[in-house]
Image 1 (cartoon, rainbow, N blue to C red):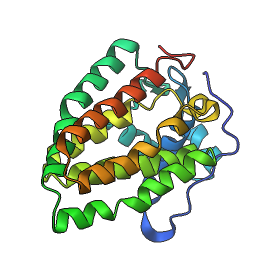
Image 2 (image 1 turned 180 degrees about the vertical axis):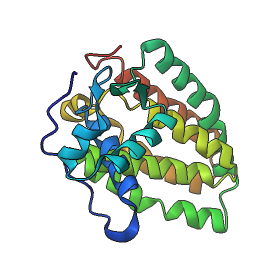
Image 3 (image 1 turned 30 degrees about the vertical axis):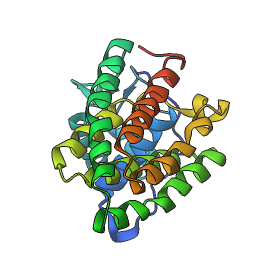
Length: 231
């Protein structure tokens, strides 16, 4: 069985805030983000459990959570395989994000007053954390802050289906490992756009917000055109 050396696996320190299953799932997502678990490779729950220092049951449960998210698939009698996503599917996901996110963000900007404006202003620390994480090349923290920023922004429109759809698209499109993009400085080139989104929303500038979000998503798809070892 193909298996990348994951001997240094550690669980995030959430204490009692999350179940062991949730902690393992979060740790596995981090391995996917950083490319330490690669598309096409097989992983067994018992072996991962031994490396985490836990029993196989919560690892298997966590892997099934990732199956439901489309990040891995079950291989009968062998374990789990990391899902590979090719250019055609990436293009389809980027197209869907472009159809959904710009108009929704534009509507948030158009309605940005009162409580909405306060909620937008509260996103500034996240925008700063995105830039700080990119600056120190902390990919996992960058992804966590970036995802929270965009989903909280979209949630201000009030449509939970939009949020869940975008969450799923973002999760599935992070299967290749973004480390090369972080190390090359590509990500750092676009982090300031998050602060710009906050500013445009507070200015209630719907046209410029929509244009910025389209451009932002375009950066993401263009960046993924280059990573090696894609399906």
